Length: 305
Image (cartoon, rainbow, N blue to C red; front, side):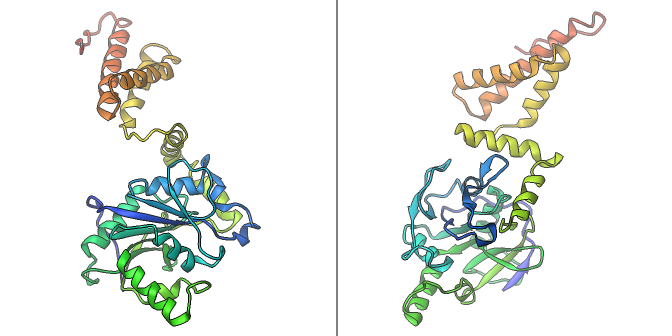
């Protein structure tokens, strides 16, 4: 059980399933519908589902609700039987060798963190750590384990859940630490991705953080993509440069109109990051040629057509 700092760039993730626990009572929030609380305009549950969007199967253990991404629903029996019972119920709907287990209140979890967890689980690359750990979990700023922000070997989870059920007759009501104490775990320190929302102060802090200068643009783009059902990664820097060139070289209102037209053209060309990049290149070149005409003594910009 060794703590370590992971390598900066994770490798490609192995196929995996995801189990998201979203059925807690949220007592410290006065019984509010915690998975439905919005941070950055998106429900907490949808933010977590975006982070594990590459899962082969995603199981949400809770009463069904509308979500931005398709999921499979499960419920522990009886409902409210605790996280161990919920995990057991969700795991029954998975088949992959690796399973990511997440709570539904992680506003800053992202796909890169999920990849890091899976990479460490698959390779066992922690210094002095186990060659093949049963699981890899995050720790919070105080060094506390966060077993609901973790990747596990599914067979290890099933083995220990069966052992606990045999010893106690059932797993309902048992604390999650009964399971994790029996597993060989590696730990990754990540104070941001491990942040969870248990109180209204946590919700307020999360909402304030995403509006900070360094975060707000990425957060807005992610929210818009979820809202519009777009799953497309493009170079936003290219689009921002295009908007700047259109605003400065033509007129300020040209910036949003030009980026809209670029998106439309890219869609007609089949979509995808390459189509967006090509349409942006052409529009940026046009904006520069347009601006050149206002500078009589300047060398003309070559036609990039």
